Length: 430
Image 1 (tube, rainbow, N blue to C red):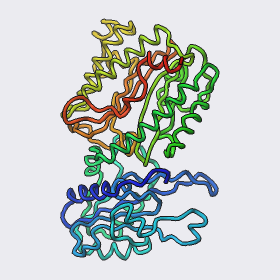
Image 2 (image 1 turned 135 degrees about the vertical axis):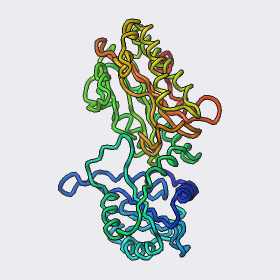
Image 3 (image 1 turned 90 degrees about the horizontal axis):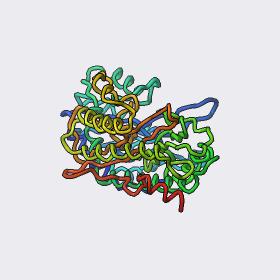
Image 4 (image 1 turned 180 degrees about the horizontal axis):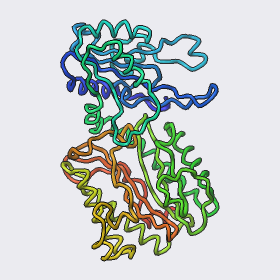
């Protein structure tokens, strides 16, 4: 891995917290992701399943974690199963985790090779009443592929049909949404790398550059700072491309007078950052562009203040809608009649700001978190209002990642990344 080794105390604490929520005499099992094929012998780069990483720090394929807090055999209360490494694997693929390295990484003391999984599980199952299976229940999940976790669940329930079944996901939704300080420090590193990338491209942008050239500059800066690269598919949208919310082609030339909307950020140690900025290709905003930019920035500032313990996500978005409505009225994009006659299910402001303002962020860019429950300290949210005006040929989105505090306004992990319009212009025109 490119990143520095993470303190195993994080994973020890995470397992302890998860185990405390389990039913008596129950076993929880977590699988790594597959390496997914492309065609022939080509594969996609490996990405670890975030749940087994969260609980163990193990970042390689064909790994299994089992938790059985009430097991009569104390040595079997936490077990990692790994692929047995050998000289052949070391030559062709590089070294895999040894038992000693796995313990150092995870804090798990009992390590078995994967071929012992069925035998050990059979012994453990005889003492257990319930299996916790790990299903993907994120509100944005849309998965067509059968995962390694899915296959294991089928096998487990067929092999042990008399056991009760419980779900890991509701526990993980709560635990993963509240970040440990070690996690916050890792997310800060991801944001710091993102800052370096953004400052790099402010020096690079000029009329005539291509969106993909900017993407390359960002990737260079991210990787040279120990990131695997982008935390999500990068959006580099010049001109009217910014009005396509998920524009990812990044294949157009940037023209003088246009704006470029960036939704690009680095990961670090599997933790995401999520940044949006909008900058002028020529280094200067027009008066109209700056007026819209400042309106978006104002909504962002006021929306951020609403992210405090006890806030309900749905109510928060209603309040942000009111803020945006006020700014759109000032800009002349909507009028009082539009507001008076609006459909309450699709308010007038939605014509120019059609997406949500905030989502959880952490190991996943759209991270775990139960949206119907009140916000709490150490939740991390994005704040990302935007105004999109196809008829004027530009769109603007501004986004930072913030940590909810016990008291006061959230802490902005991206506070050092330039955002004020005048500051952007000053950097682009030294």
